[in-house]
Picture (cartoon, one colour):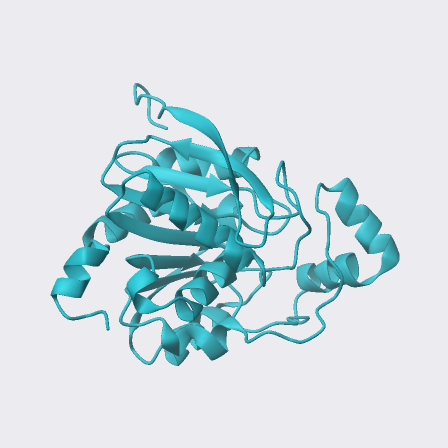
Amino acid sequence: MTCGSPEPTTRSVAVFTADGVRLSGVVAAPGHDLAVVVGHGFTNNTARPTVQRVLRRLARGRTVIALDFRGHGRSGGRSTLGVDEVLDLAAGVELARRLGHRRIATLGFSMGASVVVRHAALTPEAERPDAVVAVSGPARWYERETPPMRRLHWLVEEPAGRLLARALGVRLAAAWREVPPSPVELARRVPPTPLLLVHGDRDHYFPAEHGRSLHLAAGGGAELWLERGMRHAESATSPELVDRMGAWLDANAPASSDRRQDGHVA
């Protein structure tokens, strides 16, 4: 933060998902009109300095709600790598509604980016967030073309890797019984909800082709920012980029009631 900027007021919260998982997280800068529900990346949580830095910056002029995904941090349950985490994000959106927010947006990083896209696509339009931002997100599952993703697959697929994941603070669920629809398969369902895709041209987990594929799949109903020199997710997100994403949300997240009056929601 710049010198002299006040720290946002932050309090801890706990909520339950529709399938009964207890999630822990934080609400920062309560009381603003726009609430942004943030989904972190795999192995991250709201206590990590890189995540906290983004949350504090985003909370300048907005309420920020961030919950540790299941199997991460102080939350219960086990990580399903972005599938049941849609219920976790929905719990954050519902908390924003209970707090009285008329304007609600979602913003996710990496695994959290896949979650915000899938959540918007799978939620009835009248119940969706008012805008969605996906940063460094995968277009498809089973990316193995980059060394970090090959290491991640070892982490989640091999017994020794799953033990290491637990040491890293992630509790993993069993392997998928059925492969769920991927973000690129669902992206076309997100519009007319405003969708911003942010991807680094030096992303070492998911190459920039993932961002382009999501943009193409959205059928022109999304905006794509290819960030020069940016690598992956929260650790690569500069304060300046947080400010630009925040300004985009300020301008592109009309209240749900306003969208209904404009006839944009069935």
